Image 1 (cartoon, rainbow, N blue to C red):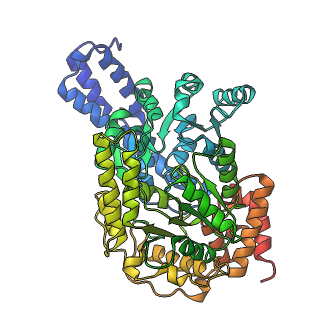
Image 2: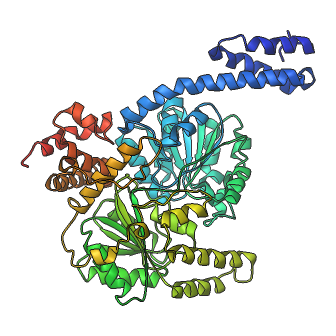
Length: 591
């Protein structure tokens, strides 16, 4: 208690004096008054409390202003990006100012940057709650490639390695700690009290809500974090959340006056197509046609059942496609092997049930095919979100029929929820998914409207708007097209981004790009081969070295100096130091 403040008038005068201080000097005095309020609340009148709130807002704005410049500098130096995507700076400003935040941003919108940059700027340790243990190593490897000191703690570690990492965390040698929600009931939860914890980020936050499409009971372990660390900002991140789910996330995590940020669900680099089954050509043959037209590119084929995933993968392998199945019936070692091969570009296609993919960090997935209709629009959006995370164009093709609805109804009837209100909700979700697929209008507009967002017709990013028959166009294709169709798409997409500016998106029909803006196809393939070799040497996924989008930009600009390479999207200082000489030599090689 402050012994000099013993009357209501003295406390009021102290509060008024706060507003006369420079914004940077408010915080220490404000904290003393907060402590005084906790001990003697009767000395604080409504006027005094209003003055304290005003002073707190000034201090927060000062912290935000102080962080804006360093945040942008970190974005360029560490990540190699010239500007923030929509919504990112708002989130960073909020958590840098100590405020909780709930952000609904589509996959590929750069959610991870919103906690990685504050982790670098705040110092101490940022806890990242991530649902899939199998992805944590790749996430940590990716952070190491750009110079961010990160680690993970989970059940895959032996006692000696866990002790070593714990010691590093306590010594302040690491910035990011990835942990699964299950770990917060075990040793990770006990460790947090001994760390200089600065921030908590909860990825895939919709998993905490029983109203969400992917409720995971283990996420309820997070409910007490805010009460345990009341002064530490919590950032909840998800790609899909209805208003009901958002409200439940905020309640379950006990967020205090959170800033709500919602990015647009429209992603212009994803081209959506819906193809009705039963029109003649079988689904497997149509899938094969699409895959062969994208030979050498990474793709995911989602299937309704384990059997369908297995038979589709076998069908493709027999036709010399590097494909494998992934589902919950495989052993953990088998699933890890498939995911590892796919992330390192040793496998082109994964045929999977919904067991594969949530939170997948592979940025260069160029297509997602749905052999069968998904259970819900939320699930569909999550699954197409695996494609094009690097911002380069990608195709998403949904095969559907009313028979899929009947099959999904049968699965619901045979589940534990068959007699519950939940089963009724699931059947409604299936029919909404069918209605979306069966529409003649803009797919993106219908999809966004499901999440209460009103967007104009895309005109260029769905098959209904372009009247494109993507399966027929793939007929007879046999050769890689990374330097052809994909290269032209990259140039067109880059032109759209330039015309749209940093905050919007172009709506007009885009003219064909100039030849100088189209990537050199031969150089692009050589750069991909170099990336693969370097990644294998370092035992990291290929996309961790550079994304497809970065390689495409190199194949357009053809930089010949380190400074020129540093101007390429996705090239930061550490990657320039690590990989610059090799890529500059390849660019300067035979044309």
